[in-house]
Length: 134
Image (cartoon, rainbow, N blue to C red; front, side, top):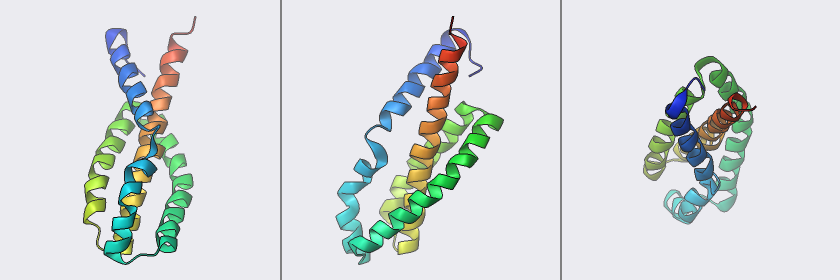
């Protein structure tokens, strides 16, 4: 968090908003549409759960890459990138026509929201508090 002065407080406010925005989780954002996705694509509940399980396994490895990106490029750039992917992932999920497309969209949602934006925002908050410790 290289920001100084008043700009540092702006970063702090937006980092807190990003973290709070992830409290409800993407599961609650997607869950109301699960029945429609299963019906439209003729997926069973087991198949959809399996797609989600693959997504969760992928997220375990993704977090290591996000940590490296935060160290190399900084939290703010990682949050911007992740936020853009989050915004693109929801409309793409609505357009998914196959199981593979649903899997890719679920991965985009999970990996960019919780694993990328939330992680990098928490990193911003931690750096803000470390810089201001007395």
